[in-house]
Image (cartoon, rainbow, N blue to C red):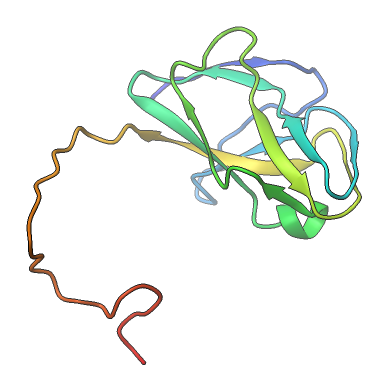
Length: 144
């Protein structure tokens, strides 16, 4: 089992917890009440900083209900936080674009994360032909 040191920037947010047998993603919460206007870009503070284990990174994505509940689109599609973003002031944020006027409150579950091992070092070998079966090109599973 890996250990992650975590710093909370607010006493108001619920502590992170792993929900066994439900999901291997961990919910992150908004750390302050915010009113966001349609068309605005904002950084939503998540109220935590972490020291990830060496060789790991965190993937941060919206929850499935984030757009429905708040009208937020995560502007970088997926956040990647590597183990070097681990300083005392390195609070995590969710960068969003608001598609409608909305309010987000302290402890609203706004996104989720998981940690994964870094990609192994790979070597690219150029070829003129690939031997795998063709699937029909982009946007198809081979069925017309």
